[in-house]
Length: 120
Image 1 (cartoon, helix red, strand yellow):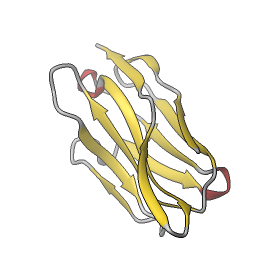
Image 2 (tube, rainbow, N blue to C red; image 1 turned 90 degrees about the vertical axis):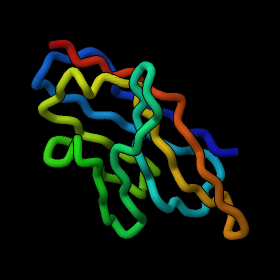
Image 3 (cartoon, rainbow, N blue to C red; image 1 turned 45 degrees about the vertical axis):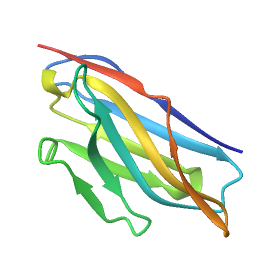
């Protein structure tokens, strides 16, 4: 059994910062890519950032230079540091972890989502 729990969302003013966390627990052999997605009301879920097991990172153009993704493998946790937040960053943020519970299988596990609201 694998559990993925997110934390860190909330209400922040324009230009402010928030840090999201996403921690996995349970039976874990390895974790590959760790990603953050977001979904705004009436819009499709979009990829925000990814960090590979080799610590390579990729960002959506809309967040480059403002958001930083990082991971702590000892804690099975991925973070998203969000700076200079804008109202258009308002969305529910989800993490997705590529987890192998054993060396014979691998699945994607999603967090429950955390609301980020940026006021103007």
